[in-house]
Image 1 (tube, rainbow, N blue to C red):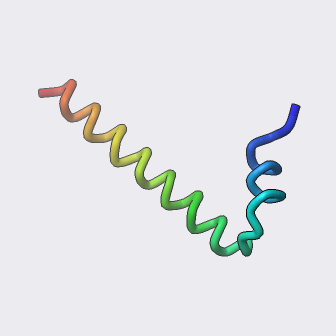
Image 2: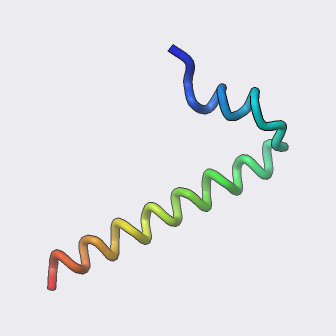
Image 3: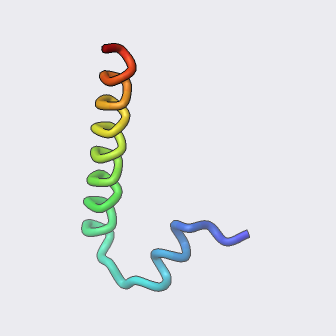
Length: 43
C-alpha cells in the first residue's frame, strides 16, 4: 500500500517547508470546520 504522503512527495517537488506549511494550513482548515460544526450542533 502506498502512503499518500509518499505519493505527494514523489509526484510534487515541494520543499519540506512548503509541504509543512500546506499540512499546517490543512490542519487549521480542518480545525476551523470542526469547531464551526460543533458550534452549529451546540446551538
